[in-house]
Length: 216
Figure (cartoon, helix red, strand yellow):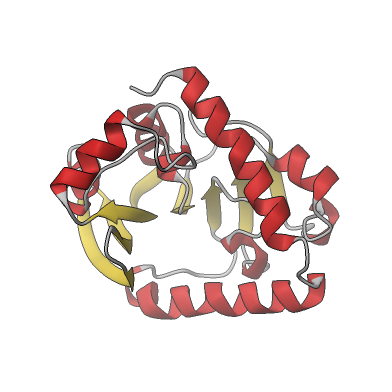
C-alpha cells in the first residue's frame, strides 16, 4: 500500500510534467497527433473490443488528452483527480471541447457510478493511483458483465530493479512498481480473462503493454 504522501508528491510532479511537456506544443498540432496515437491503439486492439457507437465508455485516469478525445460517437465518462488543474494550466484541455464527455474530478478509488460501462479504459494511469487494489476493483465493479477492461501499463523487465524502485522512489511519477505477470494477475484474480497482451514499446527497464480483459 502506498502512503498518501508519496501519492500526493506523485500527483504534484504529474501536473508539473504535463505543463512542461506541453509548454511549447501547439494545441491544434498536438491534439491532431494525439488523436492519431489513440486511433492506432484502437486499431491494434479493436478486434477484442467490439465497440459500437452509443455504448457507455469510461476513461479512468484520463489526463488532459485521454482516449476520450476520439470517442465522440459514444457516451463517455472521464475521471481524473487533476482535471481542474489541467483546465486552469493547460490550453490543450478545456472541458467544453468535449461536450459528449461527462467529466469527474476525483480519484479512481473514490469514483462511483449509477451505470456500468461496456468498455473501461485505464490508459497509463493505474500505477499513478494511491490504492492499487481499490482502483482495480473500481474498474471491475463498473464494467458490465461480458464487458471489456483495457489497461495500459509500464511493466518492469528486471526483478532487481523492480525491488529497488519499490524501496526508493526513483520513479516519482509512478508509486507502484510491478511486472507484467503481476498486473495480469490483478485482473484475473478479480474474475477477468486476459484476451490480449499487446507490446506497445520495448525499453530496458520497462516495457509498455496494453492488457485487454473480459469481465466474466
